Length: 258
Image 1 (cartoon, helix red, strand yellow):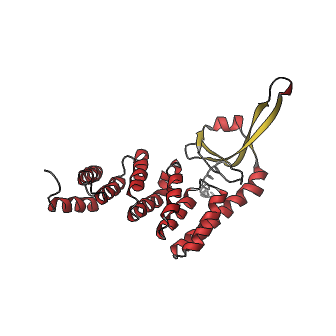
Image 2 (cartoon, rainbow, N blue to C red):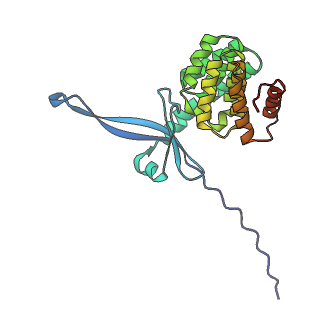
Image 3 (tube, rainbow, N blue to C red):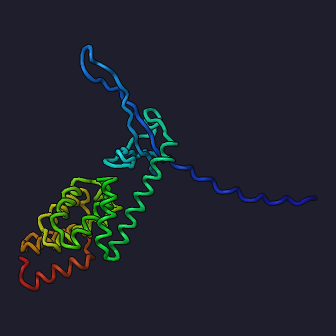
């Protein structure tokens, strides 16, 4: 009697590929009145990508054909119903533009890391001209200005960044921390406080933000404010060693009211 041959294990199910690409919407526009009234179709382009929960994150393309500006989350049904895919436009125009922008920022990052501030400024500036709201490029340019003491130019970047909510997303946390620290080191205390306060509005449970604000308050000789923010940092994380040491230092100087 022939023995049963064991079946080979089934190959793992292939993960469903997430949607990513360029889509367009059309809107009927009316121009003029009365006998001069005419209608035209306005076409807008969006970069869209599917998130882990199945919703779609969309972002408009700017005049340089790169994603820029505020992002929106829409349901999959809305994408299928109101948006038209533009695969050729994505492949031959938008994707190369996005890649070139990433390469420009990567070159700028390398120059800044190597203390080549002039070359870094040139490359970051080139990236910002393509996408004025690019978070990495703006942070990099601002840090370059701060590192060479160009406070007026850094102020311009600060005013731009303070309006870009994407600058305070988790993926950019190391950059906004570095930027805030450099604002403080350059004696731009008012800007540092405004900057950290904006970040705090978007991330209220980050003990490091409270600690950083405490450092600025200390520079401003606001001891009660320093103590208050240190205590808030320690409430969120009782094991926060730097905050505990800072508070202990203030206590040793008799600056903390019991």
